[in-house]
Image 1 (cartoon, rainbow, N blue to C red):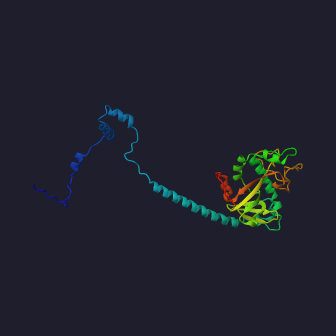
Image 2 (cartoon, helix red, strand yellow):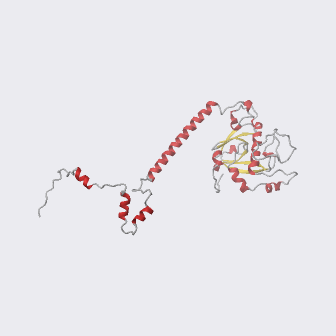
Image 3 (cartoon, rainbow, N blue to C red):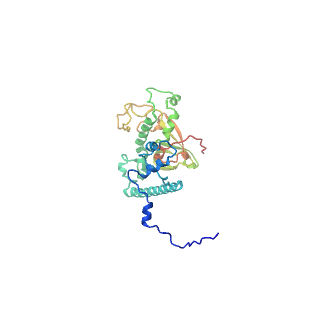
Length: 309
């Protein structure tokens, strides 16, 4: 059988325009392509026109699956966006710190010390009586604790020391609130620390950072105490220090802003602290407390055993 020789370099056969017009299918509005094709394809159905009308007519039909981004690509885009946000956050932090230094926010007039935020009291001259000027802040904090923990009103007469704990709220209800509370104005004491020179230091908290507490002691000294490897104690009043007429949403009363009440063993005077009245003492583990106060407010803490000093 003879083989036919084919020239692979020969030009492709050209189809004339007239031949192309003969093979072209012409469609009209009376017989569009999609319904005609679907109805003709449903050869096994007894009513192809009815199936087309009920299931296909008037609906959007996808001729092919849309392209989807791969999971790896989405993960890379997410990481890139997170890095960009972190870079912007650091940039804003540097700019904000520079603006604070230029505006002198960390410095203030000693004459206005009683009326300004005392959280950064360490800029004031050492000749001032710092501790006594911080007592109003401490009394505000006691009022804040009285409302936050729902402390009971002080009794009218005397009370036995062993019954103080029985009248206080349960520890299970106080602990979650204390974890998220603001401690500026509280009296903190270093109970244990790997640095033995810090043990026993006590003072009013004026500034809390992520890793340290800044205290003003009774000797008007400013001490920066690291949270790491330290155990602190703080006290809250056993009974509410707010007046009986106080309502939620009202400003906390300051010493001297209201008529002087009758002397009471359960309410501190303007020159006293929470340590001079019946109080409840709590321990604060610094290693588990290394968060900013704003982060603690929205953080969920899990109960777990702690091995400390």
